[in-house]
Length: 90
Image (cartoon, rainbow, N blue to C red):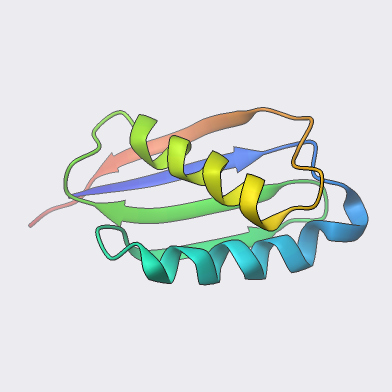
C-alpha cells in the first residue's frame, strides 16, 4: 500500500477552497483510492490518498489532473508536483 501526496499550484485563489471540496468529493467515486483528502493551504491544493498499485504516484497525479479539469473553472495554469510516496505496512 502506498500513501501519495501531491500538490498543484496555479489554482485561482478565489477558487481554491471550493476546488478542494469538489476534488475530494470527486475521489469518492474512485474506490481504488482510499482515505483521499484534498485541502487548500491558501496557495495550492494538496491531495493525499492511499492505493495499492501506484508506487510512483503517476496514476494518482493523472487522476488529480483530470479532477482539476472537471472541478476548477478554467483549470489550472500550474503544475502538479509529487511531494511524497510512502510505503505503508500491510
